[in-house]
Amino acid sequence: PAGSSPWALSGHVMPSTSIRNFEYDPDRRILSVWFVASGRHYEFLDVPPESFAAFKSAFAKGHYFNEHIRNHFAFRMVT
Image (tube, rainbow, N blue to C red; front, side):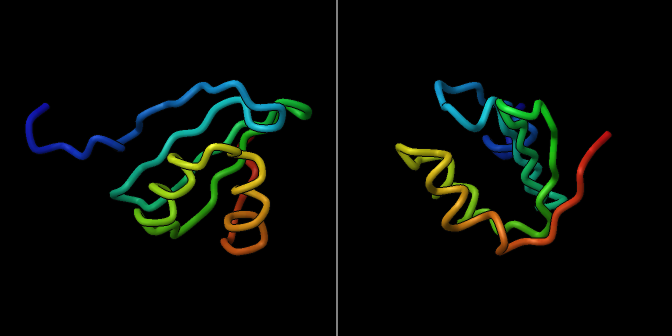
């Protein structure tokens, strides 16, 4: 819809060895990530739009995630 963020709850499936899928909610600033190996889903809290944009555009999602998201934002596992 017009006026909505292009990132709002947009899911992304990509060829990655570690990350199966991700989506970002800009209103809540939550980055949701599903992992390939465990199948687990985590939410990373208070992730700024700039951090999501950099993650989204990174060629190596797993590497970027490990360097810039993991251990930098609070998170919770979604069951």
